[in-house]
Length: 303
Length: 335
Image (tube, rainbow over all chains, first blue to last red; front, side, top):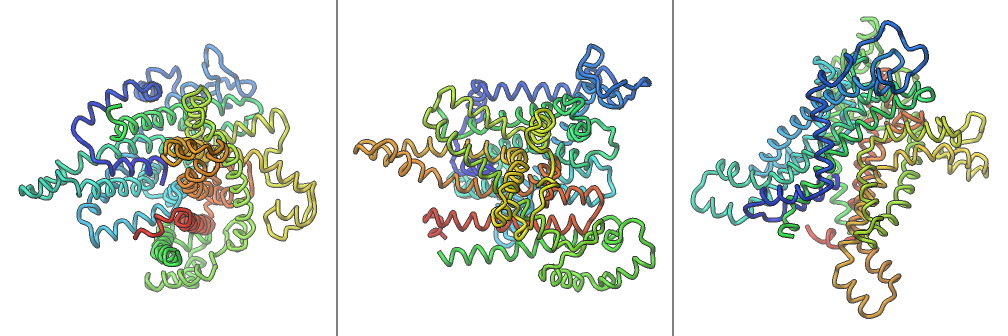
């Protein structure tokens, strides 16, 4: 369990009252580090979406005249220099943002939706179903995330490598969200407003969807933001280990870092640019996640 | 206390069984099936059939699982396709290297993280406090393989202060009674070897220890801030105890509870982080071994390595749970 989980599990136990979201938004806007995080994430997302407009060269284009020496540093033609085959590093970083964002968002979405479904079933149905689901989650949690992802990618499922990476990182996220939501639901179930709803005869499903879930959502949102940060690191880690996209010329940050290792003495900047790109994206999501957690923490309300 | 430990141990059984089923199914789902995975890509059909029969792959799946469970439980994890060596003996040689690296990384993280976190809390709101928070956020956000590459570039390639790869210089010859090279050097009374191994450990340990360092610093700060405002701390100060005694006996000792959990959790995670760090520094531990196996499609090694690390991870978490119950009577007595 990460600190985020520990802390958000704590958060889940606190009863909440109305107006949390508006107040959280207000507090988030006044938190300088959350704003810095938002700027980083916004930059990352804008670069990812408008990659074709921003990148001066196609990311996989290899020029006819190769650079004479490895590897030219920054210049006006190539802002971040080029790699050993003359590909423009800046364009590759820009397109790499696109890949990281898409893979990160999809894999967290996969983990979040399946995890929440399982967690909701476990928490709401309880009993035998709960035990089976949660024991299975324990087993998944027993394997360190990166190793689990490596194992899944090594299976070479009959789908493109990029999808395999999404599945692999998604699966590592399932138990985290399942546990989180189950914990939240168990805590919410005992609340007076649930008891009141049940007393006036509201149906079980309606109680779950309109009373319990909305109140259990805070910690899930915080965790999703932090999970995005981890997912981006994990995608790059897989790429770094040679488990990135099938085509090695695909611009992927981890892959670029791995390639840069061979030319480290000649051009260390080849490693610095993708490394810093990963850091900025990850730091952004971490800062927003932290800010959100503080903003949504009922214990800090009204301060 | 004994009941608590026994209960935790019993909880381990279904997890380990589930893990074995998962890994068993994983082998069956590998591309081309387990026989082809064992033999490599150039296997002939006859050879595949022979191996399928020898390993009982033509028998019912439940029977196969039982066989797999028996051999695995007896410590036989098969042999590597690439090196033809038994996986168990390879683990025996490589795990001490990884464990040694993880321990040194943890010592680095604790030695720096605890005092920094404590001071940040003491000087709450100061520039130092803000800097430490920013530093810890960067520490959590920097991918360890990037940090490792940068450390290697600066301190080995550029400055030439420290060796860039391996666990010991090729020119240093030494017996290895325990395979923990630092320990071996002490037993053999070889200070030159001890120094050599230490120099090889510094950069990987810093890279591997960066995340735990950042997290320990943050948790220590939060825990000390939390405890600092407790009534018993105010009482201790009011009755005139010296600040040092209040710090050590009243604040630090109570703050250690949440810190110790994090230390345990992070120790488990260090083992998987080792895959990346060891790859960069070509450090001959379990992690770089698995990473190479991925590259060579050495499936028995991937399977054995992941199963082994997962079991170690589960056991470390168990030890953490038990020691936490030991430290905190409230946990032990509830439930």
